[in-house]
Length: 186
Image (cartoon, rainbow, N blue to C red; front, side, top):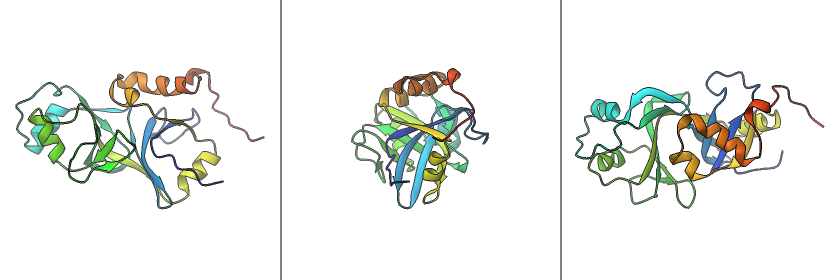
């Protein structure tokens, strides 16, 4: 398979996906290069809000408008570590620019800024991430485990989690309910 860079794309799990971590998942790829890929599942909220996370981390808040924002299961790797997708990219410590408008970081300073009302306009917080070794994601694509489509920030930050998968499928002109669990090769 030729080299492809899926940074800034959505991975849509095919109906045949058996791995319970990824069945019916929508994953945003934050980095994809010759060393592998890193992404965040963006449609699996945990039973945790940003308020609970702030309390667990001891972050003081003067701004509470995002307290009800759900924290998501980002993937099965390092589930005890937080990851923050944010827009705009801004000047935060250790931000990895994903594309021209979205950044990824694990540093606590962005959450502290959010608690003070000085954070980015949009954010999505996950615990854990999804990771692929070199060539692994390409192999899974060849096996028809995923569909891919360039990501849209409105799906990342503005849609309810339960609508994100269908919206990403809509970018391809497809309806998830009409996809077959069987795959074939021509």
